Amino acid sequence: MSAARLLQLARNHGSHGVMIATAESCTGGMLSAALTGIAGSSDMFDRGFVTYSNAAKSEMLGVLPRTLDRFGAVSEPVALEMAIGALAHSNATLAVSITGVAGPGGSANKPEGRVCFGLAFQGRDAEAETIEFGPRGRDYVRIAARDHALFLLISALSD
Image (cartoon, rainbow, N blue to C red; front, side, top):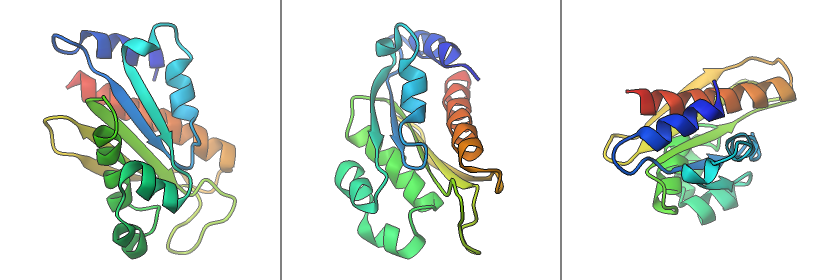
């Protein structure tokens, strides 16, 4: 998956193109860095939120404390609220979120390598999914999560 391909799709989508926002936790801004690493990315990238703590998820994205308390930060409901919040707190029309356990460690309920993604596209229903990348190390999980989020953005614009 290529950030350059995403830029091309975003520029050509509809009459005005698409602006993108990211909401990242376990990747710590890696997706935003990949998107802004290409010339011309300001045509499609509005902003990125790095919300590593639960407080940041609530303060910057409007994730409800009760959602965090009930499901935990690594959950589809939180990923969904993160993506919806990124849309609400930006000028974007498409947003993706990433929250997960990069490792090392984890728990029986939230194992290392579990990453939840949210996708919110103005005018469509928001959606979330979980990918189990497995206990393959922090670097691997973070890179795989970044790449999967890029895939989700490209897929949303390819429909």
